[in-house]
Image 1 (cartoon, one colour):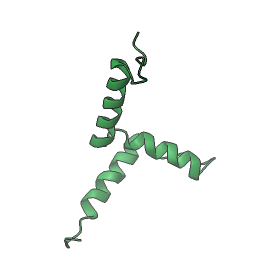
Image 2 (spheres, rainbow, N blue to C red):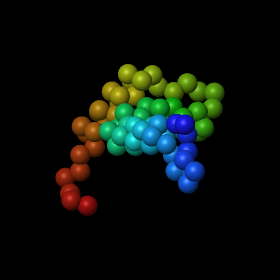
Image 3 (cartoon, rainbow, N blue to C red):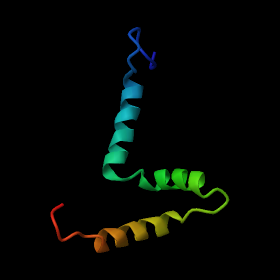
Length: 71
């Protein structure tokens, strides 16, 4: 019953999973998972940064990557 309805629309469970995924993307929570996925494609055989190191680097980039201009 929790699957798609007769019209093909996702059921409540599917809609909640989609909402959760969108929320994680919006808040940046899924950034490390996306980084690891992309790293494995681009750098096969080379281990990606650990999660703690990834978030530290991201924080440093956010602090030093501030633009003084509007565009």
